[in-house]
Image (cartoon, rainbow, N blue to C red; front, side, top):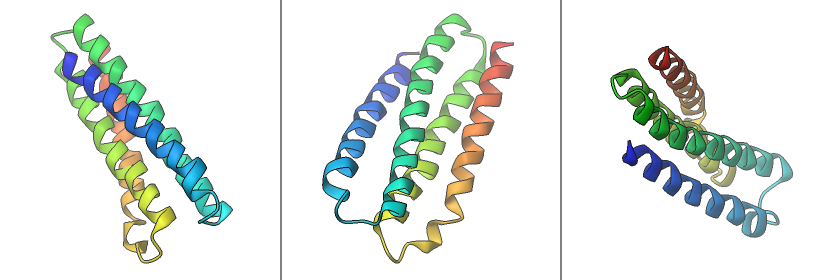
Length: 121
């Protein structure tokens, strides 16, 4: 499905921009521990944006597998919830309320990958 390939590509571009921002603009402005949190967000963002491109290719191979599409949406939600919360937690001092959101993003990633696997099988 072209939509997931386009979405994954756009999210890859965003991940590269966010990663470059962290490496250059944030490096001297946040603590090394917070920079590590930020980098973890970028790492998972990149991995799962690539996963969305894979979802687009799989949907083409398995057009009857709606679970693959659903899995792709879970990966998208995971990027927003997991990586997004880590970005905010690393730069905002009063964003502790987002702490519980991060595991929901991780759960979204796991659900997405299971749905993709089941959809392919």
